[in-house]
Image (cartoon, rainbow, N blue to C red; front, top):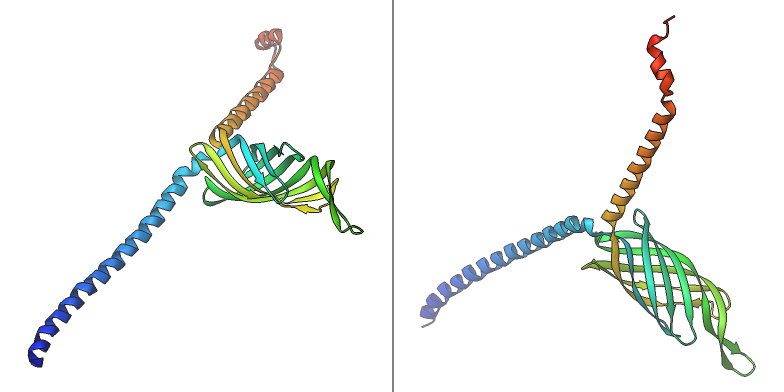
Length: 239
């Protein structure tokens, strides 16, 4: 009986090994193809989305920290290659209203449509402040304090359907006007692309060509001879 079972079991085991061995080989091939397709897709996205960068954008920004939740507007302008200038005006419509100007450097992650950035700037506004009283062991709140400080910023952004969506962390270092030396803020922005980078470069090239043309015309006018002198030239005696 055991011999009979062994004779039956051996072909079954061989059949299972053949099937599962082929399945494992097939799975390995499929995984390799999936990885190659993913890399290819990322490469295609990186090249095709290169031209969809933005030059000017405008939108809203939501900021949050331990002290307040603020709503504001943000405008961003590309000034150099991968360098932008951003202005932010935000308020919680109660005790805190601030304005910020930052210079940011951008670098692509997958493509120039999805990148990270970092920068620094200055800020000014009217804010609340918390002053510690060591005698009473209490914290006194004051408001209406004119403040000035320095900003840092780091974040990521993605351009989707003509909209720039960004997530950033913006620490603020107080210079004057506030008791707290440091306040951090997490912000989410959504800005509409007003001018694409390609259009901005096209306008710059057009202005450069017009300037070169005006300069060329001015030089030609300066080098031109008076009308009567040009007429009398053929009748002049050669030396």
